[in-house]
Amino acid sequence: MENFTIRNFFRQWKAILPLAIILTFVGLIAGVYYSNTQKQSYGVTNEVLVVNMLDTMQPDDFVAIANSEKTVGKEAKKEANVDSSCDYKASKSGNVIKITATCESNGEDSRKLAESVTNVFSRAIINIYEMDGLQTKVISEGSSEESVTTLKRISYIALPTFAGLAISAFIAFVKLDRATSEKRKK
Image (cartoon, rainbow, N blue to C red; front, side, top):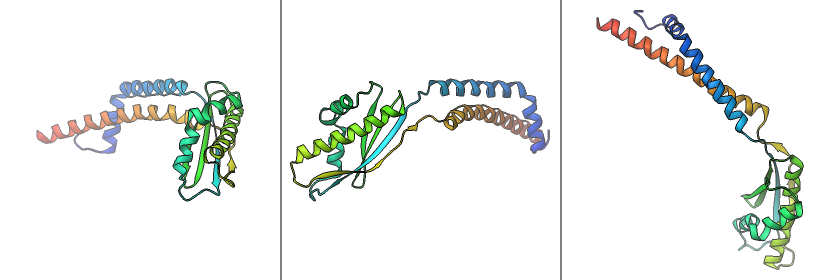
């Protein structure tokens, strides 16, 4: 192997074929293991807009109220009657408050929790601010979405498998480089 060519590269890769098979198999096993450790969960996002608010009111304040376990969380989970695998998180996007509920049990529980958090949040800000005309409007109610789809599971398996194959190709590349550079030195 005097020259660094593609043909010589594939010859070198063929020479380490057992190692390439082992690395690819290890990547496959790691990918299958990781894919099986990923728990399925379902998410629903509701978007809420607070209307007729004062200029001094900030969306960050509303997010803090929605994320408060004491003010909203306990009552919403109790009202929705969901299991302990369910949780929610509020965030903002401009003046819109996004309430995302996730449950490992099923999509219906996620929907119930998101709806419950939205309702309890609405009541909480009206009680806290005690203003006439302060209202919340639900802009959109999301549908249940799986967090770990079949495509994600395939990618969890394929990426480590291809990584094992790529590592074997890199080893072949390094061996060929070393062999051709030693030939040039002589």
